[in-house]
Length: 288
Length: 337
Image (tube, rainbow over all chains, first blue to last red; front, side, top):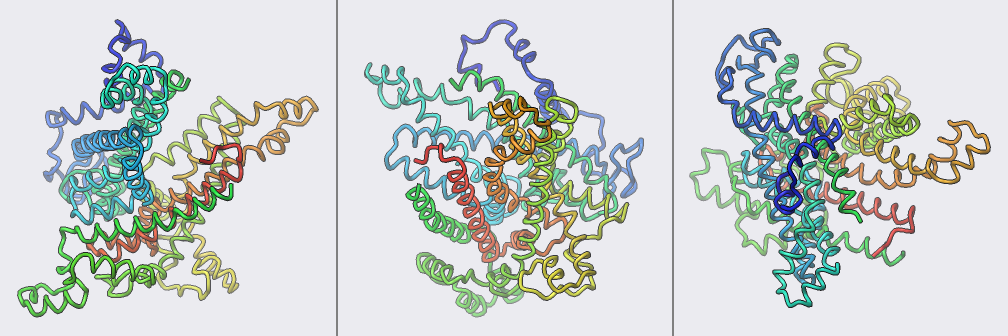
């Protein structure tokens, strides 16, 4: 979210953060707080007074109690601790996937939109073919091809998501390219790359930013789905999807899957709240 | 318009060619060794056995040759032989497709009906607590991990309350009804076998609710916003001025116009459901192509996963095609480039 501030350095005034916060709807504020909570958890969870996520700390399959707030799993591990530690896997991966997909997709999309011709044709047909797959099937096939593991699942998800950003950026570049200030820059003798990077791209980021925020939750969800299927994190890892898969095997002990499910749900909801809020704030300005 | 439709239809084979090429490429890039699934471990050291098996499965041909074979076979509907079931992938898929379709169609009905209901109520009681609750419920459906909500609902309704049966399409000892559609509910109804019909329906209920819930959000949001837009039109003011009661204004005047965009979103919903079906089937042990895809991906069974992916992509493309055509038909004002 700081990207926007970097692009418009003059727009920052003292108190801008507080003013921005006040403009967020309640759900948006809630979403920001949830995402901040998880971000802080990722960085500091190892210092929290929790049981070790991989150690057997109590009797097996205990329901939630004062000692183990979310109970223990089939190997006597503390579910609360494992759920909080799960953030260390899901959050950075979702972030890395969205960032890579945005970078790759936006670069291709900008090139396609700006240069047109065969560059456009090649890039956009590749995007079309990629978007022809149901996302989960493509991710499963790629993940199965590369072999199970979180890193390969992440690669699979970048492959699923880049065309969305390519299309967004291309449409945006096509629109901005026809504006008068771009014409002026071309008339002034600016080179093609300079026109693209200095005069066109800075005006193209808003839809990408909004979409990326919303997709953060969807990526976290797909990452968990792949792990649930068995193509992501390997069993002892306290990853949310594989924890739910363990919960599905120990069906009567509902609490094993409860924590990780709520964790995923909170992130998907938070991301869509923040994305909605950003759209409400920015769209009024960008849609002229 | 006709030109647009033709062009839109003609792109489908091209996209399918791309899809098949990607599926082939991926199957060739595999790091896992398909031989491991084919050759018993103690025979791996015997070069003669390995070579024979390679020849049998065509693994010894050069890449371009295998590509041409693959495409040729695909055109004839031959997607290869599954490494795990040792049967043609097309047979496996054909056998399992009706289960998935039955689930997806049922979920689509649930999603549309519930979504339209929520959208209608939300628009009628705009910005009240009822509106908030309805939208919250719909949003929850599209945000909750489907493999988790399925698990929780299964626990509540099947284990605790015993209102619904367990997993699968029928109870363990029930013979599937004979029939042409492969939809157990319809086949049983056609055969007038009511006990089996009730059983099939009760097995279908929970997975269809879980899967349908995931798309209520899309439908509800669209119905609500499109109703609110209709309600702001002049003809609504006219209807009210003439003294039409509010329910009449809503259902008789606003709704029919608001439904046009909803019709067009159904194709999109269908595409979305294909994805959700994979996870729903895994939770409910539903013997469709979704659970087939999951088990083939787990055992690195490339012909199988490739086949499912191609079938899934075909369904996805057709659903998108129908969506686009319905949209162009329902709203001729949109620019068709």
